[in-house]
Length: 358
Image 1 (cartoon, rainbow, N blue to C red):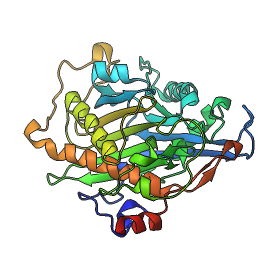
Image 2 (tube, rainbow, N blue to C red):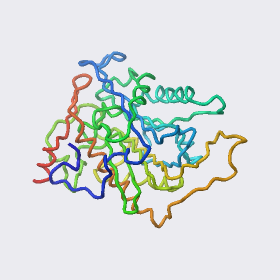
Image 3 (cartoon, helix red, strand yellow):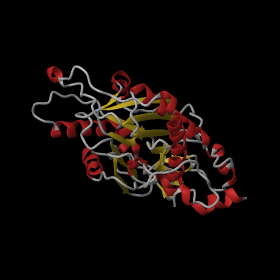
Image 4 (cartoon, rainbow, N blue to C red):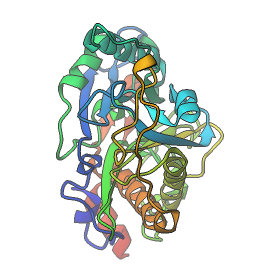
């Protein structure tokens, strides 16, 4: 069940056909999930509860057909590689991959390998892939580094348009959100001008007592055990925003900033131990030249820009879709027991409906 299916839960805005980031034309998502082993933690052996999620931003490889992009940091106790080049150039030049904290390096290197394999012989190229992480060490053998290049290839092979699997999948497999089982979630909005905004989150953040849904302090009213482990609120969230509106880089950065409003509506506070990193990209300008064209680079390119006076509906769409994507991650997730018998309990839809009605 997704958030829109929960009796008594009303959400703002009009969703796209799949209510997913893939409602933005050309955007596709793939997951690879690794789950095996039970019992005590043995580093390098398991138990393993992790994976990789890949977002491909367009039909052409991003290094060949860059997209305007921008980013925002709510709290920086986390990693999203490649952001310095996003800030400097205003462009996204790679797929976006999400995984666990200690597997960022191998996933980044795997994306470089893919680019090296797929580039044209005449292309002068370099690669600064965008790879984000959240820490799944409460359930997973995170130090065992079980994600490999082959797992990244599996996620890339699985990319598709349409509905996106949520909850305990891909990079979200071992994640915990507001003290409940968390993971991957997605949602979209279509604004009155016809543009679409899609959001995908890897939700591993928040404190139980702060979880508020539709104004109701749900976290305080649901009596389920908290997973034992580090301090409540020690986690992170990565938010990826896509839109088909013709935005320039500074406008993408403004959209990325608004993801924090969706996080905050549910009680996320950007805690000290949380890495809350947001990236937004726009597909509305498709004539952006790659930076490695060299002498063949065009002198100028024609671009279109959405007037800033019309951008507020997109801000609303980002906040609304981020909020719903987190809810979808919570509701799609299933109770999971990981290393050392630690259990993260799911927030069941019927439980949420009962609490909202009380």
